[in-house]
Length: 286
Image 1 (cartoon, rainbow, N blue to C red):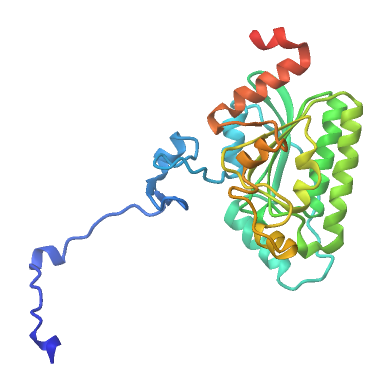
Image 2: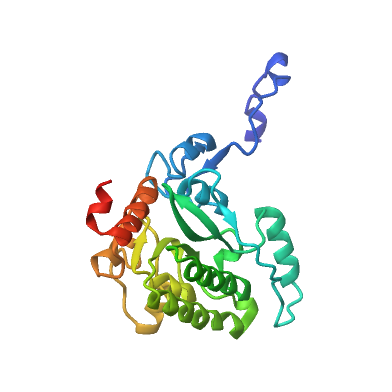
């Protein structure tokens, strides 16, 4: 057989015993360019691939660290348990597993903090928890935060990332769209600022409710934003969609969002908008 004619490679005994020490959990792979990146380097670059500029999705804690002044975040103590209205057997198990894995209790964290000295109410969603889907607890936490912003007369900032309403909670999750929208109407009547920041991806019932209702709607570069997915839309209308459809850049061009802001500039941009709202154009020059 031809296999018998292939000479075996002789490996020196010394090399056989060499153990290569490669640290585990220190590297990340870019979904876009497939480059392997040292996590510490990725952190220093605001969670952006240094090779192709792709934006990695951020954990709630990382986002809060980037946006808020150090040591100013105070989480709202909202004692609400996620229920199981449809009686799904696997849903509670999945929630438990996700809480252990992500170290967060739900798909959103809410509280107060300061951005360059300006106090705000802030909500940050996390795609790592059931794709940031909006169930009863998420809707209630965001509504509570809106009410707190009204009570404290503070600007409201929401970082959105979501696959939409949470299907495991059925129609009750869809009701959160109306609840959050009604609360934002009261915020608007109070004359308070609401800045919505759309990150990748923002879809479904979240896009169709509070994510799109900001006085100013910002987005990160390359973020995918929409209601239904592209494939569903193409199948529904029977036509091909334009190139770049549902990207932040496409939506900016068509007037859906106000500005695309690089991650490293988000904190200062939000601060300027708050100052402008508080005291007019002259306050932004201070």
